[in-house]
Length: 145
Image 1: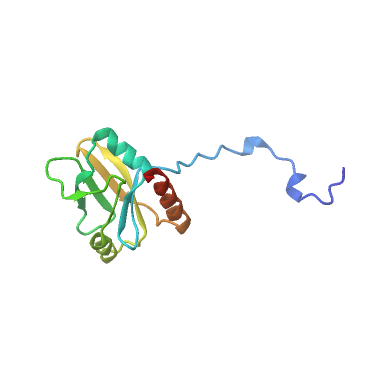
Image 2: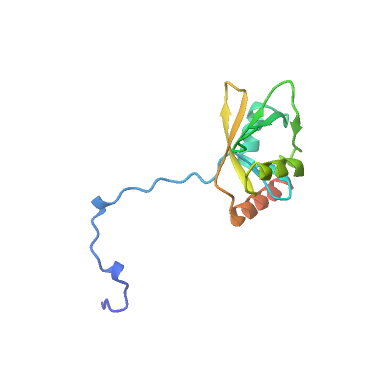
């Protein structure tokens, strides 16, 4: 068999002891996303997690005054924010406040349950790519039908 048409990497000797397993990336996690048009969305995984704690989509919703990189969604008696059953709502004022605070939209907050607070803490992640945003929207449309 001729090696003339094969790439060089097809012919080299590889010592597997020089390699390690690549860590598996967790692609989906509970998140809250905010688009430039003001659409605030709880992703499917996060919505499912919320439903394990409560049927209500009403929260005490707080964002850090100076550093808009962290927000809180708390369960309790004094909700100030609610989502439709689909896990989304239009909130242009919130989106504007994020931009004014230095957050680039679209933005995604990775949400983690905090038992002491009886709610979720959201930390701003890297900006959403357009493909990730479109994928998230397609997924949301399929589940809301």
